[in-house]
Amino acid sequence: MGKTSRKTELAEETLLVQLEELAQALDVEVRYEPMRREGPTFPGGLCRLKGQYVLIIDSKATPEDKIQALAKAANRFDLSQVYLRPGVREFLDKQDASH
Image (cartoon, rainbow, N blue to C red):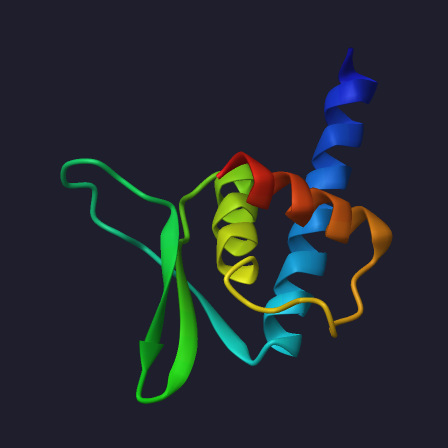
């Protein structure tokens, strides 16, 4: 059972890094900031600050929540002309279809 969770961790870590690289390619600054917990919480969100896209993600969010925040932000952009690894494109397509 330990192998499966370790494999999942590696897959999440790899996907997280690839989504962070995608954000950089889209000229989106990703910031991990501690957020106070008041009311319903969200792992993060995309905003524009002085003309620059900034994605603020709770530094205490789980890797899965960080991935979701990055995927949601990435899917707001036209990705048709951006190189994505096949697994990443497939993941983003699934996320876009489910929201």
